[in-house]
Amino acid sequence: MWFLLGLLAGAVAVWVVAPPRPVPSPLPTPLPSPSPLPSAVPTPSPTPRVEGVLYLIIDDAGYSLEQVEPFLSLPFPLAVSVLPGLPLSGEVARRVREAGKTLFLHLPMEPEGNEDPGPGALYVSMSRAEIEHVIAEDLASVPGVQGVNNHMGSRFTKDPLRMEWILSILAAGGLLFVDSRTTPESVVRETAFRLGVPVMERDVFLDNEQTAVYVEQAFMHAVQIARRRGRAVAIGHVWTRVLPGVLGRMADRARDEGVILGDILEVLERR
Image (cartoon, rainbow, N blue to C red; front, side, top):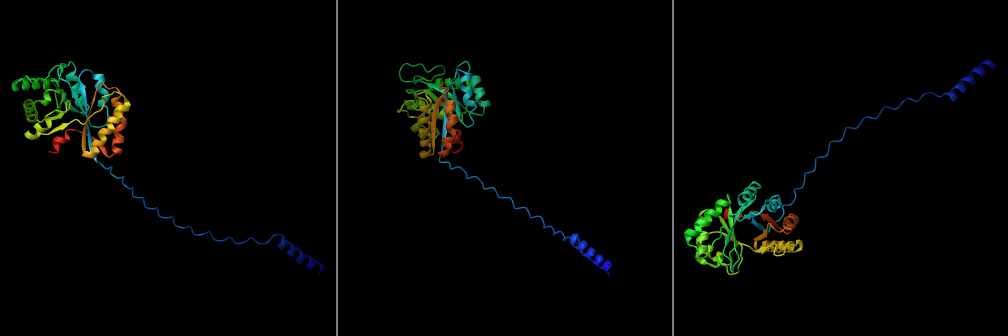
């Protein structure tokens, strides 16, 4: 009997010390992978408003390649106006065309006083035949011209008959004339209206003083004119060293004001 009791006690002890292994729980069923979220449709950037266009003309090119090169690398439209009859007139004209800029002839005209307008100039004493001959020579020295503006000319642009000749000759060749407005007595606008030919007028000289502060202020004045009237013409000069840098900085500011820099030949296309 003691023997049986001993066996029972041993069995209980074994059961307490080593309980049976638990049955493992079944593994959870994996959830399906979530479907990818649809890609967000990009919101298009708003189109900048355009309230006006500013046209730039850079005068007095033809003396130096170094002077004109900084303007040719600017990333917006502008016209470069080349003086005729200079040793580098043709080469500068070629560089302007290759750079994709608009090429103008900076046509010398007689001023008030005794200042020399340079080679290829027109004078009020000339006949129509003489004027036609000089213009033909000037155009040949600046090949590929797309427009014309006057160099000096405070006396010549006051002469109604000779301006009628000039505008008729240029219009026949499909060339836009821009009056540099070197005198408030210019008759270009009324003569062009009478003939029915397109012309533009300079609104602002950018570099009457050749400092960055002055040029910036003049540029913004031109921008405000363009906003108010829809378009404006500003003229600078290749010999103003600060001008390319200021123009490069101010182009974005003009756009912020709703004014873009445009190609002045658009005037002919919109007729």
